[in-house]
Amino acid sequence: MDQIIGNFSLLLQFPVVNIEILVQGMMIGAIFVLAAYGLALVWGVMNVKNLAQGDFVIAGGYTSWWLAQQGLPPLLGVPIAFCVLWCIGWVLYKLVIRRVIERDLFTSLLATFGIGIMMAQFMNLLFGSDTQSLRLNYDSLTFFDGVVNVPIAKLIGVILALSLAAAVIIFMKSSRMGQAIRATAQDARAARVMGIDTDRIYAFTFSLNAAICGAAGAIIVLVWEIQPFYGIAYSIRSFVIVTAAGIGNIPGVIAAGLGIGALEQYGAHIFGIGYQQAIAVLLLLLVLIYRLAQQRRLRQVLQ
Image 1 (tube, rainbow, N blue to C red):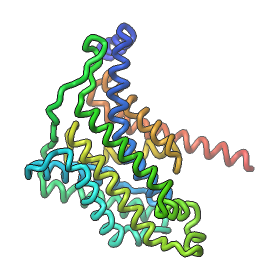
Image 2 (cartoon, rainbow, N blue to C red):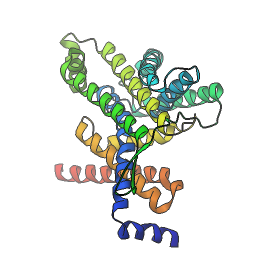
Image 3 (cartoon, rainbow, N blue to C red):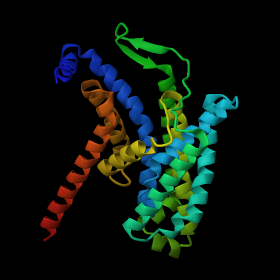
Image 4 (tube, rainbow, N blue to C red):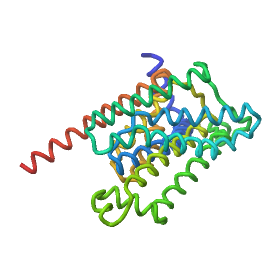
């Protein structure tokens, strides 16, 4: 307890430390936003709650890591992981996901949970259970007489994450495929009447989600460690972000992702790094309780 009080008092005595924590948290949150945006896309368009979201992220990280072991530049792993996970997502849609669309919630949760377990065990079999990373040997930018440090490797990761997120948003708003995806999300039956091949849209959407997660994993392995069973942490964060922001609320997803990244950093500073994952779980429980209370109030008003 004394250590916790000491860590908290440090934030009050040296306010500049808060800037360091916020910067680091928002840099982490920017990468969380990618995986959460993919989940929001699949959830909103297909009504599938993908419990394998984090495992797609880890698969992208291992793809980039393996390519780097073969001598490819680490940054080249990001677009390659995007393409590889696109193909994996397409195969999984054709084999599994297309059969659970428009089924009950339990069926989709069970199917994607099984996919997550299968992917984690397969990665464990291929790469082993040791943690892996591709540390970019770049310096850090320092501010406020060295109190605030911004690693250039993390800055590169943030730029890549934000660039990909912006590209996906522009694609969704400007392209004909993006318009078809939004039409299907609003009313799939009406979209079919208008001649849109919704099965093709669903396949594209799920593949795009997997590809976004793959790129996020390739960015994560540049600055953090990955391990075959780390996927659940990213799945939980994605669900927290999407549940807090709401389906289709892109600005909300971005704000929630950055906020959760900052909260985790504050929690790690005050309580210790071992509690960082627990904070994500606690946030998920709080968000679910809030949403349930909100729905209960809404039902009372309608009655």
